[in-house]
Length: 322
Image 1: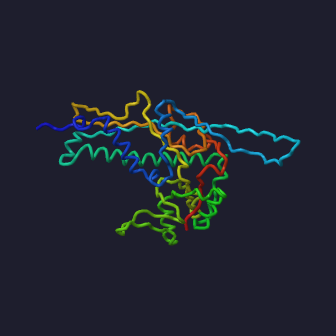
Image 2 (image 1 turned 90 degrees about the vertical axis):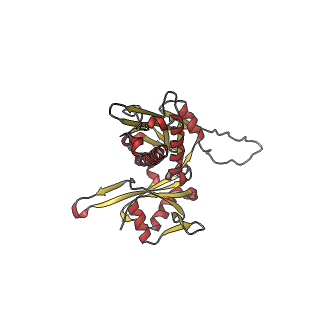
Image 3 (image 1 turned 90 degrees about the horizontal axis):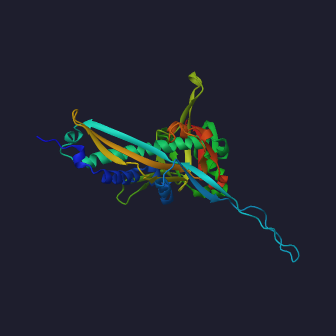
């Protein structure tokens, strides 16, 4: 009996487009509003290169002047600067022996794409956490970190953190935390749930902020022996404070299939070019490879703040749980 092979059921062009679409649907960081798809970034990625320059105008400065019939106004000027994002070229291949045959009775394309999309969404979240770890370890970002490493998180601490943005704090709308922190806040009865009209739980909020829970969030063990305790990092975000782009640089094959006929092994290969960038904190590192690894993204010396403090819509809290 003939066995259906992966190459018989997957059209690479359709597969790549569907994986991208399904990844976006499953992405917690996109659905929460933390990251916003940026069409301009998509275009710049497609143009190729390992970094993207994003020029911007700095805020106007200088005091106003009293009008006079004898002294003219002194013109000020507007200065330009640039934010820099790194393009992340990533890929992954999965293989199995006669995979399509093992999926008999189900739609193999559906099953494969669904698993790829879930995988991609998880990897993007890991990448974002690495980016945030590095950006907030930069010396120039110290004004965006509330360090309460010896205290347990509570509502007052989160309010103190949002105050780091002063009168721009009303832009904050989402909070990203470890599941242990989420459980701690549940114990404090501070989590609220929005429900659908039929009574099903839709999403959780904390002090009005949409919640994203991820066990990949930074956790650091401080001290030794009986004195050891864990310090968690929790982030507050304004909508669109992370720019996300995805494009197709020339000569990058997004999806393809392969087969080792003698071994009966089928392979599905997926590649992508992605930008996941905290707006206003520029990448200034030099990666060891063609594109930064997650460990390089998580290194503070590779990042530098370029926006004014209030224009960067992310703050970090370092804290314990009780």
